[in-house]
Length: 335
Image (cartoon, rainbow, N blue to C red):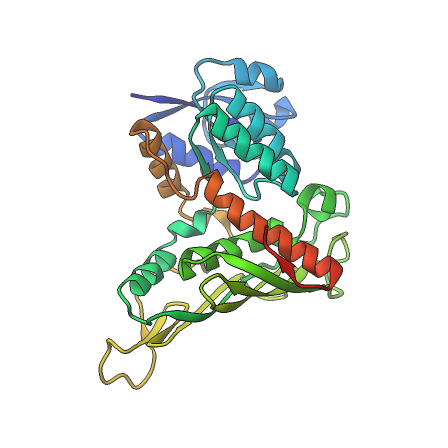
């Protein structure tokens, strides 16, 4: 069986979705939909893709050939487009963040559940080899019960204009919605416990004046398991991209791709886990192919593929709590 695919939004990240679908033997891209025809035609030509092009969303959603839609539009449109696609009976692969506020988050969750369609949220780092290896080490009791975790998303973004959508709070949301949500999702995935309370602070340096929101935020968090953690996001740092992970357990420690474990007798220093790390902020470095392949297989075999929207809602609830805490200067319980 071949699934017909539609790509909604033809910005930079759509390239990775398109390439992954073009390499999957069970999918065919039948249409692109973009605000401007010129933008969609440019993306199609760049990738040597021949398909229909829409600028009318309703007509795109009425195309019966399309069974699966990748939503690659700007952040503030994800909720509206997800709801519309689900109500049209399309399976949805949603770029993060899925929503910028709790009301939209809840409405999306209801729409997808009521429509009975499959969903996957593009927290693509869950499929990074390092995170998979760390999760296996934790499940194998290499470090025991985790009592402290740290995850950082530090991404030196290009200096954009104040008019660009990523510069505006109304369209981008916040530094945690833009990219720090990856760190929150990784913390939930690795600690395997929900975050129940956050206390956050935000600031800004002098190097990125185009942001109309604080591009640096740090949160202290408490997990339901009793563990504590620190999660930070920065989009104004002057350094290469870094995604730092530290997990401390009562039998050992995982520090990025290094391990100190009670299972490694005679250790005199950290041992290195040979694996690919999320060491590049370039989306071409991320495992989109595995994400798309997993989702397509899940649709064809009628099974959920994590992180689906219901799972991702929990990550976004934490992110929105972090933003509220940073704004109010008070601890916030996660709803």
